[in-house]
Image (cartoon, rainbow, N blue to C red; front, side, top):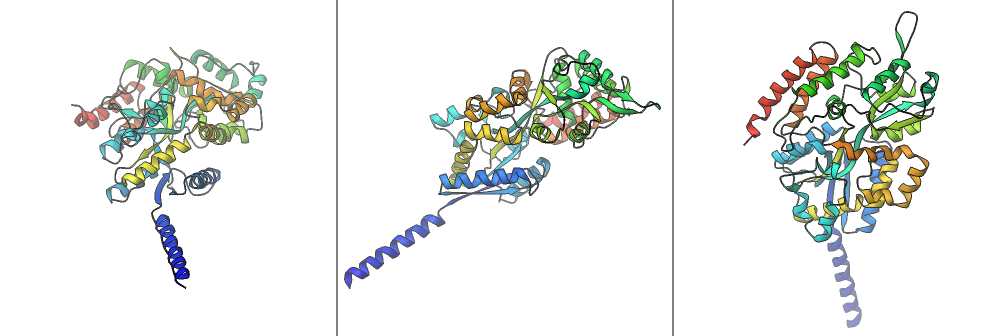
Length: 428
């Protein structure tokens, strides 16, 4: 009888211990910038479940928060209310804003072991330009991109162009676009030679032109912009001229969201857009297409783009450690490779490209490696203190020039004046 009671007591203690272990589980709330539903959410849900199986003491709770812009607003609102996510994927360019709001911790203050330091050095250097400042690492690259050129090989062939030879320079791009633009008897375009979208992320596409013209839009400290430099104005003049002077692209504001659809419907022969559209184009283009680095002006070049993981300051030390463990896991070479294959984003570390899955994918679809190869020419995406306000000043100027409301020079001088006003308090 006594032995039975002892056994029952031991069982009860074991059960209590198991319940305590279960309740001691660390939960990571994880904001991810996409609307609810769709294939991306299924991939993220699957990754979270796989991580939990391998790490039974950690629960990952993905919260789908809408667009990037909606997600940072929700994250900062939650931070100010004292209940932020533990981690979130936000734009790499949100780094200064998050630091200024005292919302995040440096990753290397949590990931400080030797193997953590090696992990933080494993990413492509171009992606770290928007991830580090002041000698600290604030973001971890996850879904990153560059701008690339897509072209319809069938329309090239129809126009007498080599379907396997994309334009390598601005002059070639203009000459090709002139051959590829078709008009009806009334002079209305039935097919445009090229389309560079100017809604959504006009500053980002514009950075393609400015980088190629040998100039950057801001300094590394994020407190000074160069919107009114002559090379910046020249770059904008070239973009404006594609539509207004050369008439090889629609005039005015070209929609970001409809540009891929225009490409699928053969309304345009070439387009500039994110490599993040690669899987979309692969799945929906009913014709042979090519992908190339952006054509060179004075040099080749593209800004990087996309999202980083951040860890929020008001989470507990245990949650921060768990978040870093999850981020390390999801950015491992094999998972970075699979994420790139599934989505079209650039696998963020060189060793991901050496995995069997990625080697096989690139062998069958060489276009997947174009954005990676372009990283050697890439620059940091526009990022400053008060980034959304500074970016809006530039976007407003770009659209004013593209619609003809202002000359490129006036538009960029006005944008620079507004950026100066916004950034002046941040200069020491």
